[in-house]
Image (tube, rainbow, N blue to C red; front, side, top):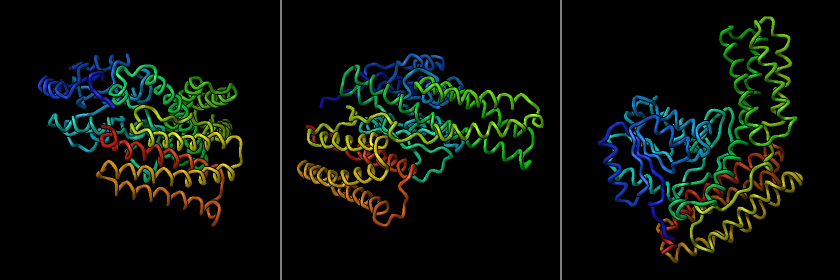
Length: 432
């Protein structure tokens, strides 16, 4: 597979001309040609707004302004229409609050200055090999830095996103294929945000009504909670319209919004008679939108950035993705027991065949991580067997809506995450 950085649209953003010149020289030597370097915060804003970038290497501040704010706006689709620009952020300090703010903005990678150009080149090469899955919560959109141990109020399964850096490298200008994959991923992202916003509404309304009943917090705290509920409902109405939601869903959230605004405008003592109705409306929204069935998920595809470049391996991955898509579609038409049983059986049978073939190819090309890769395969098969046992043999885990959500999370993290993290390392070994 012929790969080149020359078509990647790159911006180098820093107030220091020394940083910009050093980075530009090194990246030009690596093969980048479409390079913009800027010391203007407004220019960065405009480049993101115009969807003019695939990769941005930037300091955390430019002209004294927080670049992380622009990255967060881009990730949340409030700036431009492509939230998947690759961002490498150069940190001016190791201060914990500063690093957390940059990570929470959704940067793909962070490096502490002073930084050698070779370090940046290495990070770019790693991202080109395989980008981290994204995760969407109520207040974060970006690479999954947290793993399965993260405790958040509104968790969502990680999902693979387009890698414009790789798409430009293997496909020249990217073309309609890149734009299509971006649009499909944006649709999936918006649906995840719908779910997170609905869950946030349920949490806020429960907190408000409990605090009022128990006089647990003062008026300023309650006022802030109600204002957050209003803002969340406003955002959810906009989201629902953008994803083409049913009229009844939009009407339900709009009704809650009107009630929340009434509570927000009234003196708290006078508003208590409508707070219960607000709480009831929120519960309905949570049931309607907060537990969206996995069958509503957009179909997964083996995009160019996820292809290893070996016909047998890529064909196997397409078959495995077909199994995942069949699960999502089966949730709608079949019972939970049937779709779980069929999916686990097909994964176990075809997964074994695929892993044997893939490990044989690794041995043939002397892949240096073959042993570690084989262990990963064994672990994945063991997880499938354990799930089957807990659902259908021991029956220690009920097959309910949560089980289906957990299975969707597992499938996305297991297969798509495995391809991105492990299989893409094969590219330079199986393709000569």
